[in-house]
Length: 130
View 1 (tube, rainbow, N blue to C red):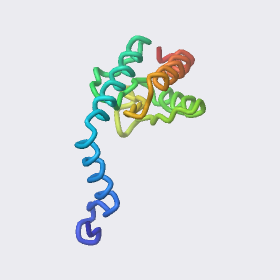
View 2: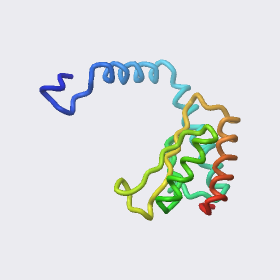
View 3: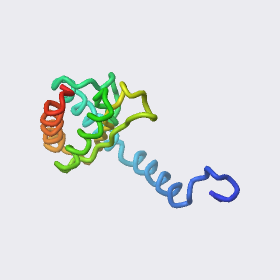
């Protein structure tokens, strides 16, 4: 992990955290199953509201806004309601592929996801995303 030998080396604390995460995954596979289940619940909810999630199959779900300003504004509105989502805009993606990156974890409950879906529905309609 010597940063002065390999400039892209992980700091020791990050390497230790990653190792610990793998240990937890091996000991508690139900966490992975819960994250997958929560991801499916979120994706299906977003799709039923009319959002495009690019056929995502993971717990990190793209919510397509297709416009940089919409992505930035929608992320800000969601954050004002207590939901932290990140906009992904140019140059990371082409302007017409702007989106929000929505992440759900094993720690989220079904009611957490339903509340988030309500916020996405409200902000998506307000900004013309859906």
